[in-house]
Image 1 (tube, rainbow, N blue to C red):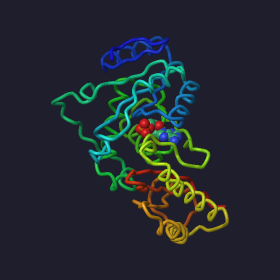
Image 2 (image 1 turned 45 degrees about the horizontal axis):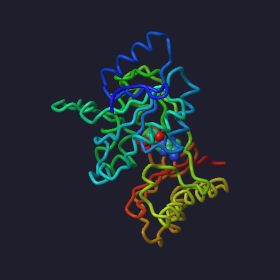
Image 3 (image 1 turned 60 degrees about the vertical axis):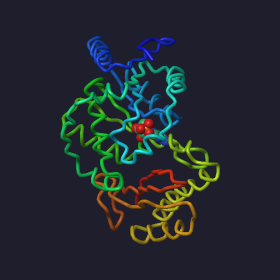
Image 4 (image 1 turned 45 degrees about the vertical axis):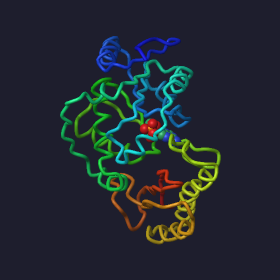
Amino acid sequence: MTNGNLHGMKIVTQTDKMSRWARETRKAGKTIVLVPTMGALHAGHLALFREGRRKGDVLIVSIFVNPAQFNDPSDYERYPRELETDIEKCRKEKVDVVFAPAKDGMYPAGERPERILLPDVANVLEGPSRPGHFEGVVRIVSKLFRIVEPHVAIFGLKDYQQVRVIQEMVKGQKFPVIILSCPTVRTREGLALSSRNSRLSEQGREKALLISRTLKAAQYLVSHGEKKTDVILKKLKKGLMKEEDFRIDYLRIVDAETLEEIEIITRPALLAVAAFVEGVRLIDNCILEAV
Ligand code: AMP
């Protein structure tokens, strides 16, 4: 694909062209919003785009399946890639620029990866479960920030820990960007939308509903006065134990800000879950607030 204009929307594949365009746009006094994605766009992504439209003059959506953040090579291989339909969706959402760089555009051969010091919030939950994942996330997001220099960048709370890691990274590296987050978009039944859901069978999707039902059960317990996290987790796990083709990677309640494990819910807490359904790894979360 070449750099070009499609129905008023610009498609940029080269990093230097992207930088130049963004710099000129900035100089012209326009506010730039960036929404980074890995494509296979769904309504969750589109909600971020709509928020982006409201927050600035120019909306840039990046589409790049970032190899550095996949700890499992087969997950990277099987990750859905639908650039043509993604471009069409972006056009309908009145995105101004789709930035879809090639792998060697983002990771030039021979480039020495910069040393990355991860914030503490990266060392729990997804951190130990997916070694190297957050290094890859921080690497790509900081590259995107340097190329686009957005005023605002928007991320989804479906990846709550990612939002916290990026907030800390921005603080640590003093990036002049405002980080905004959007709530998780779900199907009517409650399944959090994810590009990986396309790899589930009909039964798999049904089974995956156990995840959001577990979150709801926890919210019910907490809204009825239960504050002890071990009691809550025991009850939730009991409901999930006997399910076939469903394996929990982790199910934890942590402080919503520090992501440290807690025993009693006194401040907003995060219930985070990662589970394998039909071999597909899904994550979800919700906030628990004591009454
Ligand atoms: P991804 O393409 O999966 O890397 O996601 C790109 C952005 O969309 C990230 O900030 C995600 O947190 C966000 N996102 C993914 N799924 C959802 C969803 N169901 N609801 C809201 N945001 C989402």
